[in-house]
Image (cartoon, rainbow, N blue to C red; front, side, top):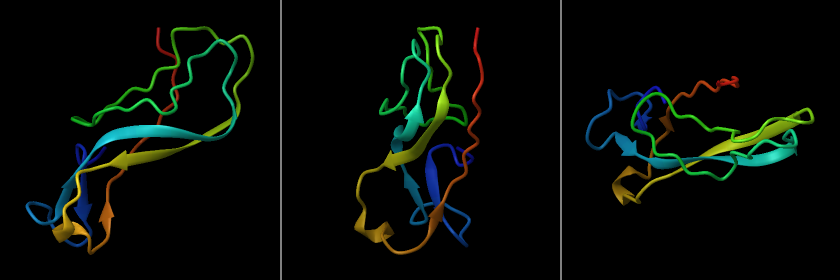
Length: 100
């Protein structure tokens, strides 16, 4: 998360009244097949407190190929009616890497 777990109102510098602090970043599988033997990272909630969050596919070793595995990222936050109006943004970089 480029904003360390905050949605910032577009056109503002952030701060009180212009940021929504969120948690529970989840991958929600939308299609495809994860390789057999891997642990599916979908629906595992992760808290955002820094710029890096890992969704692991281990323990396990792939015995078949991952094919067209697709997902949406979802977030949740405590409601605050004062922050309902506006457009908010945050940026993520998703990398698929093998960790040893």
